[in-house]
Amino acid sequence: MTTTDDILPRYVEIQRELEARIMSGAWPPGHRVPSEHELVELYGCSRMTVNKALSALANAGLILRRRRSGSFVASPKSQETVLEIHDIKAEILGTGKAYRFEILAREARRAGPEDAEHLGVAPDTQVLALTVRHFAAERPFVVEERLINLATVPAAKAEPFAAAPPGTWLLDRIAWTDAEHAIRAVSANAQTAARLDMARGGACLVVERRTWQAGEAITWVRLTYPGDRHRLVGRFNPGGLRPGAREGTKGA
Amino acid sequence: MTTTDDILPRYVEIQRELEARIMSGAWPPGHRVPSEHELVELYGCSRMTVNKALSALANAGLILRRRRSGSFVASPKSQETVLEIHDIKAEILGTGKAYRFEILAREARRAGPEDAEHLGVAPDTQVLALTVRHFAAERPFVVEERLINLATVPAAKAEPFAAAPPGTWLLDRIAWTDAEHAIRAVSANAQTAARLDMARGGACLVVERRTWQAGEAITWVRLTYPGDRHRLVGRFNPGGLRPGAREGTKGA
DNA sequence: GAGGCGATTATGTATAGACAATAAGAAAGG
DNA sequence: CCTTTCTTATTGTCTATACATAATCGCCTC
Image (cartoon, rainbow over all chains, first blue to last red; front, side, top):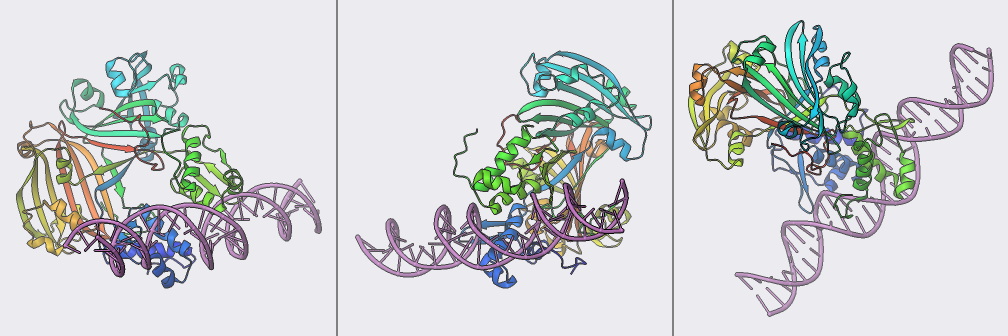
């Protein structure tokens, strides 16, 4: 079939063959996959090996397994995508442009109602509020409004954020366990327009993110991008198969 | 810890215990996980059982395994999120609102340069171009511009899309293997504003998606949402652990 | 001391067998 | 005909063992 030489583990071989039948549409959703016993005879290997292949497929959501009934090809449900939202500094440097940032505002304070709502903490919790502007090639790239929970990240209070912006600083320091993103579009108000060097009323892409570590709120951030200068891109294939093994996915 | 009764498989138990140590930060990135042999003695089970737990963790990206060296806690890298973009019909019905759609335009044609660019096919390929407006509770919810590759989905040509909108119809019929999304913000032009019952110049959230099956282009779609009425939400925790097992992630 | 070479350790893959849990279908009884 | 019970097919988990593979460590030679 493909160019893959046969030095693959047996279970991967089996997995890929079944996968190919499913992905090509030869086995449509609802089609019954041969039982483990049948596959054992077909491939001449032990049941554990077949089981490993089938379990992986089930894990990836390609098949559903029911005792006594057998395994069946699952029908894809939702259009899912994985958005990788990189650290801003890395993102800009990755495009080959010069990167710079400036801190527009900074205040350590007790969380007001709005802060508490954003960060998901009790009011009066100590927080550090920051407003940062990032530049790509000396052009405003994104405005970052951030709240850091000083109860969980006390070191932030004394940090000047001179060398690295708060996002990078946090990412180097805290291993987060949960994150929640919301993406929406808004019109630029006067302040935002001025900060981003764009027309007032122009469309902005807004990404809000909250991050937790083991249930404890770490930070909330709102990133406001000029809508005409930035877009988020994501790619997905169901079941997270070997990346780059396909070739048709290229595009403009 | 939690309320889970102990009727869990042995390997899941082991997996969760290790997971908890990693997620809590007790085992920081770079920390060495006990070897399979050590875990076998610790838990009093066979190596295969321990192996299953460790393999799952490695698979989820929580640990890295190197022969002879052992297993080590991995360090999380980028801010990733999984956006589930549901079928529009299902999405609206899921909110409890009445759903309706209307087809504003429909044309089967040979792909022009723009069509070819969007869909990623050769010019002059036969395509079906559709413009659909979706309503939630009789209010315009989103405008859908779609191209369907008739070379791969010939059945679409004769389909009236009376009962189900094209997105739902396709999803029921074609198992896609790859999808690519781009999200951006634009200002509504006169036509878009009229279609979405919003102010001209208002911010719109635009999601563009291309879908392939085994390298063959299936469809391209551009969804234009009124920015103030819609937002995309995604949640993520590294390693895709049991969903809903945590409680801190609630929010507005 | 530099370089190579074997021993050791840890993971990767595979086997054969066992019992449990589940659910579908068949048989028996009212 | 309906309900209950039995049988059986299929997946889920686990054990004990074996050999392969990779990489580190330390010894041995030069």
